[in-house]
Length: 357
Ligand code: NAP
Ligand code: FE
Image 1: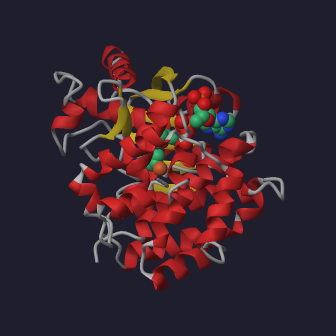
Image 2: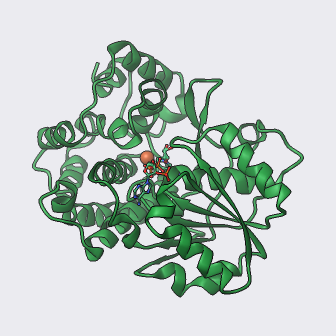
């Protein structure tokens, strides 16, 4: 068994203000990396700015991160950080802002390198990083992974470097004003991390502890995800925690086939990340060991694979063209390292069936 989690996490109401000293102690001048508008509306950006300003820490704001951020955006954030002489980075927002912040933290610390460094090298040093998540899906605040869009390849590719936040501050209150679709989409991403970590060659006792706890918590949140009950602060924190458990789980095991299948769908058809990974979960589970499948589905509150499929079709339907699904399946088949993470035999026919072809 192995377990690695270098991120220190606080998940609680008002944690940004409560732990402002720790946040400020990461450096003297922060590069705050965020999306265009949501962090200004949900209060997370104001909280971060007032937390570090209270301790005399300066900052530069880079608020141009788009959904599924590109290499070009990471390099723009890098330029802002280098020019402003930032010595630490704070990612505020969903997975897109946090992943871009990870890329910037790496590239500022390696400012003599071109963008290719993100992909042609491993283990690079990076500036200290903090993450304040405002969606309940990626778990990026506790993973070393950064998924960045490559327009040259027309898909998204994870950086080779592992860039863990030193500090993750997770407060459910930022979710309270989020649109329902965002809650659904990101909660499906969290569910998918838990499933793909559970059905994974790297799964062991410690990762399974995270998976099973995360799925039970996710199941408790089902009424909020399905819209049967309004989200309050307690429910929002549970949704954030289910997502964080998913992040901690994939930090141990990695993701597998559904995530690999999704990237071309997002790039080419604009399908949001959650629905793009959720659509393949029922099929991915169908080929898994029966006992494991039953345990995972049971923990998440699904009677069987069919009821999971019905849930995904009802809450996050997608309808990609067959040609695009075929392209995605071919791209996965060309990645032996991805296929190797799946614990059952993956021939061409199985990958095509998982891809709904
Ligand atoms: P996102 O792309 O970060 O954000 C989606 C949209 O939601 C944006 O328009 C954003 O607005 C808005 N938003 C964010 N928080 C909000 C809030 N509290 N209230 C209202 N609106 C809010 O979504 P995401 O699903 O969290 O992240 C997806 C990205 O993460 C993908 O690129 C995916 O590949 C990646 N990912 C990373 C990991 C990892 O381990 N690193 C794992 C899974 C997925 P603004 O743009 O205005 O901020
Ligand atoms: Fe994901």
